[in-house]
Amino acid sequence: MFNAGIDLNAEDLSPGRYTVRSMSLLSLMLLPILAPTPSVETQLAEIEAASKGHLGAAVITKDSRHYSRKDERFSLQSVMKMVVSMTALDLVDQGKWKLDQKFTFRRSDLSVSWQPLIEKLGEKDSMTVTVAECIEITTQNSCSAAGDFLIRKMGGTQVVNAFLKKHQIVGMSVDRQERDLQTQVGGTTWSAEMVDPAKFEFALDRVPEKLKDEAYLRYQKDKRDTTTPAAMGLLLEKLVTGKLLSPKLTKYYMGVMEGTETGADRLKAGVPAGWILGHKTGTSSTHKGLAWATNDVGYARRPSGEWVIMVGLLRGSRLDYDERETILRQVAEVALRGL
Image (cartoon, rainbow, N blue to C red; front, side):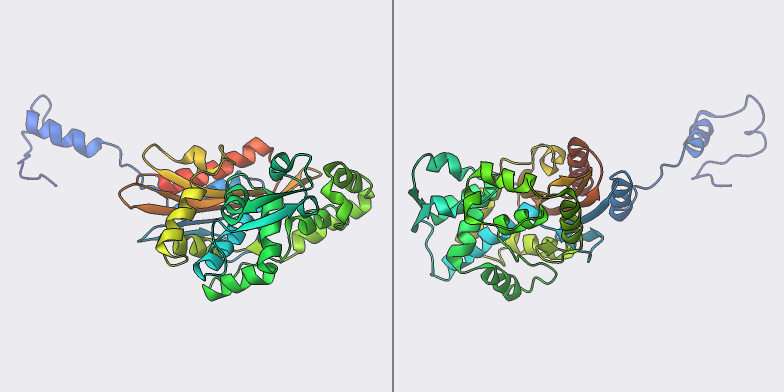
């Protein structure tokens, strides 16, 4: 018998003859055995099971890597604006642009959907914007107009993909401006008059239901403007470890990401006190109850230098909007549990 230095003989085990020390030992032996904490992969699978969709995820630290659907493709949606911003900063690092460089932004440069630059433009036909202003409003406020403007100014999405290739990010591509992607998802094509939000909505409303169904199905099958969890995790890891941009611009852009205003109930809601979150969200339209993309990707860090990469890409879910955000919050909770 296991006795840990305590002698238990027949007399000791007879009724009424337990010693204090033997009772203590037996009590300990009868305590329930605590089950080990499930693996990160198991926890991510449990989250996916409740998502009514497919969860692509990455949780990366200096010492570990965990994934869900590691090499499957997921629609980027507005997460692509983070990649565009990184590419713009790479042009600054190359000396081709400056953060305070000024461009003229015209009404014809507007995009579709969410674009806070409209408020700044007001009734004017044009205004001056800087590279830094475009990067910040593109990342922090998910402005489609600013993101599309950066793409055109840098020479097209091929420049973004060249940036990804240079950094050996395989499994991710940015292929269209927001105004092209969103009109195509809705079953129509971009035209100049759609800079007027009312005309954009009118054009979408005119699309016959059958064509809308076909367009949304094409979007689900399209490999353009997508990423794998592994590719997104690697891109973010390179950012936080200083392998993507110069030290000055790494610090600058992490500060930008940490000021992101969208997605308060996604990853951010799962980040405990003492951690700082930098992230970018993305969300597709919902068609007949199906949301093809609900995303939040980024990192959490401590002032001491510890960091955790968190990628949450929810594909094809039929949950309500708030419930989909909860799924992404749970990704952060798993990533930071016990840290």
